[in-house]
Length: 365
Image (cartoon, rainbow, N blue to C red; front, top):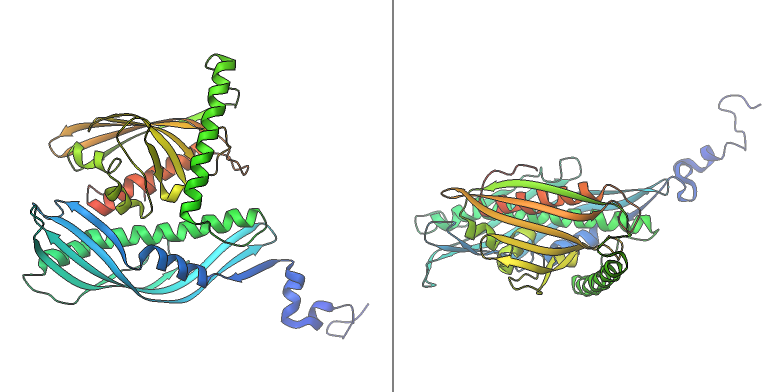
């Protein structure tokens, strides 16, 4: 037996030096993800209307906020796969976005406009995903710009934070899904995803119809989960109802392509096709029923989401959700899907609406 510090040739790790700590990528692999972050930030933020047609952000006025330029994105990002299983996304970014805020009256006349920058000196993995600081710089401060600047500082800043959180989560989810399949962290295009999910929904609905015929209304696909939620919003029913029926308003809080309607049979799609379905029922300012299917679910799974709207007091509306038929497992073998769906409603829909439109304090984030 060799003595301590003797040059025993069997001590390969010592001979390999730093390379010996991860021989043949046995413990982890690490890939540069900064180009992916840069592409995603550019796609989602550069030249994008972050908020459009926001009513009564200032009483009697309609407001827009345009992120007209992604001025700067620097830093580092990587995707590491540990021990062949766990995927970790690590990032440290500095980002600057130039904005333009415009407020118009009902006649379409510009009442107030201003420009400035959102500066994020450190978006990194160390903090909570939404814990980064946004500094708001206004190019001009004066009476004529006050209203536009206030909109950019409050609703605009909240919308930008929600958009960046959505980008990071999309990258994390894509990396995790790709890691489980043994690949890289490539993202499909939104148009392709929407087309694929629409086809998938149609196939799933056909399978459900076949089961109904065979089982007289029963289902052979196993037990399904249900979630119910009641959330109050500080706005009239009309305004919160429009968040689920007016595409421009839904795009503001989802920061993604959406397809929405109010006529039975019309398609529904949220988050670039990650969720697809169709309108089953719609009663103006009172009730919406959707067929709802998520891209990660088995092909024969279609759930039902029912939203009801009830004015509690003047300017306060309670939205009640009943979401049934949720599979317990997704198509990749991950369980507890009812909880995943519930968290999606809470954080990605209800809380984002409150943050972007100022309809109350977020409850779940």
